Length: 229
Image (cartoon, rainbow, N blue to C red; front, side, top):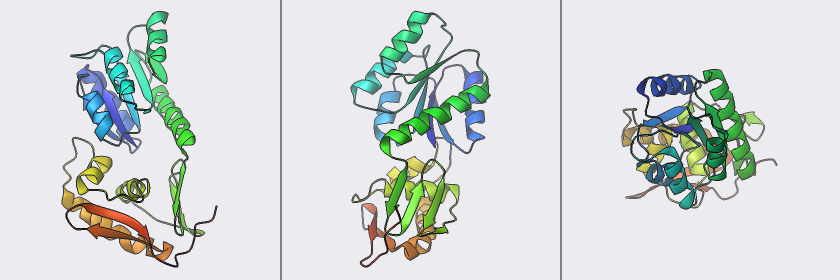
C-alpha cells in the first residue's frame, strides 16, 4: 500500500511514518499542503493522511483541491482541533474519517486498514487475467489453484500492470508506484522486477512486453487458460 502523509510536526510525522512502514507500507511525507493535490493526481496512492494545521495552505483547503480535481482517494484527517464543527466540516468536504490528536498508533493502523478495505470493496478487490488471479485484500495470488509466490515489490509491479491492462505503462510510473520518496530505486530496478515476474506469470498465459521508448504492456497469450471466478 502506498500512503501520502501530510503532517507538519516532524516528530509526529516520523513516528507515524515509522508505524505505517512497519506494516510493509510505502509512505511519502510532506509538511506542506500545496504539493498534495498534484501528487495525488499523478502518483498511485491508496490513502491520504492529512493534518489540518499544515504549512502553506491548511488541510481543509488541501482537501478541497484534492476533491475538486475528481479524486476519490480515501482521506483520513488528523487534527488537534476537537471542536465538533471542525470534524463535521472535514467530513462534509470529503474526508472519509478523522483522528483527534493525540492518538494511539494502533488505532491509526486499524483505521487505515478499514478505509482501504472499504475503498477496495467499492472498486473491486480482485484482479484477474488469463489464468492469474490477485486478491488485493488478502494479498494473495494464484495461477489456477496454485499459489503464486511474489516478493512485495514484485506484487506491487504486477498489481500496477494488471490494474492498467490495455495501456503501456512507463518505467517512471511503475517506479512511483513501488517506491517512496526516500527510496533510492532507479528505473533499472523496475527492469529487474519485470524480468523476475516474466517467468512467474508465463504459466498463466501472460507476458509482459517491452514497448521500446514507452514502457511495458501486460497481455494475454493466445490460448491462455482463464482464471477461475
